[in-house]
Amino acid sequence: MSPNAMLERGLSELGSDAGGDQRERLLRFLELLRKWNRVYSLTAIEDLCEGVRLHLLDSLSIASFLHGRRVLDVGTGPGLPGIPLAIVQPERRFVLLDCNAKKIRFVRQAVIELGLANVVPVQARIESFTDAEGFDCVLARAYASLAEIWTDAAPLLRTGGTVLALKGRRPEAELGDLPAGVAVGIHRLRVPGVEAERHLAELKPTGQDS
Image (cartoon, rainbow, N blue to C red; front, side, top):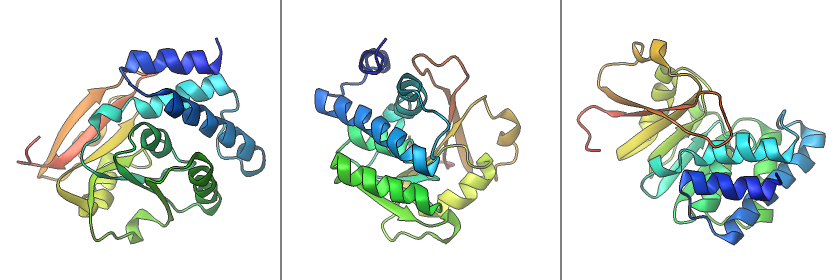
């Protein structure tokens, strides 16, 4: 199956209404990633079909959990999951944060070449990053434990905001380390073509309206 056909089928299984221009941009992002990877070693995944499954569809499996206008992607690396999400949700504003210079350099170039006016790349560590407006969603792709992610991300949330942490297996052992006052929802994700377990931990202050 071609990468285009695999993407189209996967988007259909996810219930995505991404249009032709968005699908084209998603595949163009993979091509850019593969091109830059030869010099910058941004990802271990070289095959485009693997990239569709493990980069694009994996990222887009959390699209329905996003809310509000401003989204922060912490530890975005080469723009995952932030860039695929920004392509299919142009109504939201995304800040893509990473401390690695070469990865943010790639993200900046991808944003330019893909024409993503709703994405701002930032090179910084989460511990030193500040933002006056705050975010409705903070995304974290398993760069640390849930407790560490919450400590880093909670100060950046707007009222009503949530932290969305992507994990592989259900993070049962990490739940007991979260501080009091954190409401947790664990969602099993279904990623088309991916058999490995994927879970999303949704964290927000206790008593906050859903």
